[in-house]
Length: 362
Image (cartoon, one colour):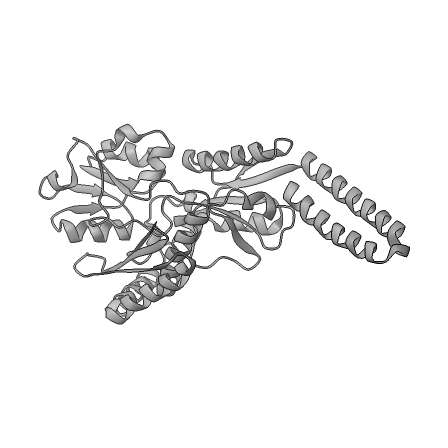
């Protein structure tokens, strides 16, 4: 709010400077300035008394994330009334079918995005890895805060690490990305579908006699469940999903009230990294229906991006790394994706897409 007010004041002061160059208009200029400042002050006061609404899913992890954003906004704008609005998405209702068979990542955001477009909420808080490649017209990502650990973790029943699991061990995951990389590293392991929130998946580790589950480190850490982690999986074995560990704050485009507030929560390095990762995913046309991974880091002002495309059974994995300036992360993401396409990723993607079409038609 204060930034917005400052912008208006800056415009008004330019009017004042013009007035000083024309002495006969000084009085008129001052009157206009006072009128503009008064209107802006009343507008800010009005906004502060209204409830600022944050849209979120209702799981414990989603609420943790939304409450984190709420706390950050209250710290910056202590007079602002802020409330959470929980929204049930289609993905929350369908728990017995893998996402790849029912429409992919957009299932967790569509209803929330519609509420944002309708004006029922002011911002939406998402896990960036849940965001589809394309964002609806009229919306944009206003901020990406500092990222939590993007790694995947193994949580096993008996404390055994990935390499120590018995022959034919059963691991629960519905992620095609995780499944393909697990099968590539350990073809003997059996993968079984595993849906639900973090707590549900951990419970199924016991109730469904699984040897282990693979989950995102960020969610485990945010829910204070680090004591359950058996092993942080090295990226050589398990390259993370695009955007994993990062939050995305979605807003309406050209929203003069909300955008200045949200911009303060943005972390430039995380934003640059995730932009590169998403450019990689977008150029591949990726979704939950394809095993794609992408992980970027910034070291000494250099952006390093590693990307991966795999067959479902992990028998074929195409992997590459590209580096460049942190000002060119989007270009680097597109270039790396094109490299993998030229190496044969296009054949993998076409095959998987035709399989997906056949499954949806059956």
